[in-house]
Length: 209
Image (tube, rainbow, N blue to C red; front, side, top):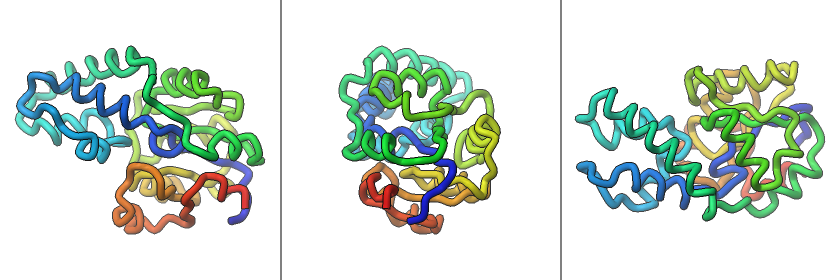
């Protein structure tokens, strides 16, 4: 794999194994709803999907106002957990420390949230500009990638996007950047393959060549 001047990283399922905290928070939000007690395996497939889309899929009879209330509750419950079950994936810290080029994130978390999470896990120092989804369409729309590249003053052709979900790969394609799918995250490998990523890795250290 060749080196790139710019790297953009998804967070959940790529840098951090955060499924246990995310799924627990979603289950707490859904307590008392028609769907309840969903397994981690069921909920994990929604990681990387916007909350509105997830709640609309899980509660098809809900109104937009009801979903907005669920989203607001999730945004209170999830950070209050303190990410106590979240872990940095093996090889992530070493890779970020050794990998040249400028680095940013491309995540559906808000910029404020991703900055706080990266700081908590000692990863913030490796990023030139943490970028989240702030008031614009989430992946698979390319907006968060455009925002990260603009903040870095970078061109799409200089960038590799690394992520674990089909939405990451689709957003990368729409933005005109190269894409790398990680096999250890939460995305369905068959769905990822349909998006034809430029590269695959089983361990982030493979980015170092």
